[in-house]
Length: 291
Image (cartoon, rainbow, N blue to C red; front, top):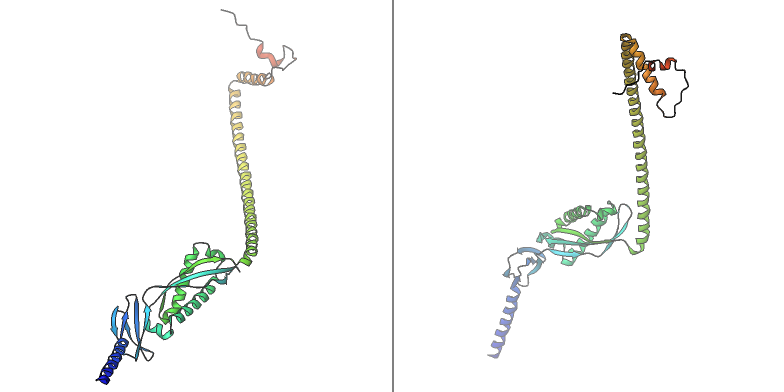
């Protein structure tokens, strides 16, 4: 009886071990791949309790959620020869479990591969861009391009890259002063060039304005001379017409003009004979008698 009891106990223990090895639990945030002798035979996405062949089949659990990979800061060189220390992070998820298992034996191996691809594509991308692209609105477009390139590289291996973003981009400590001075010199050179171009443009505009002013003044003077000549001719014609119609009145009018021009100043002094022709129109002036 004692031997039977021991045997039953051993059988129960073996059955318990076998039963425990035949079941596995999938969490709602996980997906499971059942492997038989290292080859995938089944994918289980539904959470709960599931069964497998004990001792023959193994289960590998993978995350359904979006995962994050924070890479180590890396030094890159931009197209304008600026050295930067760039720190990026990557968000990804496992999109194809079978391809993932075929490509990578563990999650650590997948992370190492993704980290290598991100660093390589980042250096390749920034090597074609100016340093200022990371400081302007172009930065978002650069990150989108980087995400697409990394995703295209990782997609055949069952990983979908959701996003790649730069957390920080700084100058190396030992290069900050030298780069600052070089940038300052470059900006001063650009400023001088822009100032020289501005001065040249100002001189060109001024010269054109002076030329246009000279032309306008010449045209105006020409027009005024023409009008003045036409006016003088018309006046002479009118005077000739008046002189022909009434010579005495014309002589009187011309004498009045002569008086006005000769006596237009308070200190004018003339020494002439009273019988001079200059005063001939004053001889017949009669005094005005008081009323």
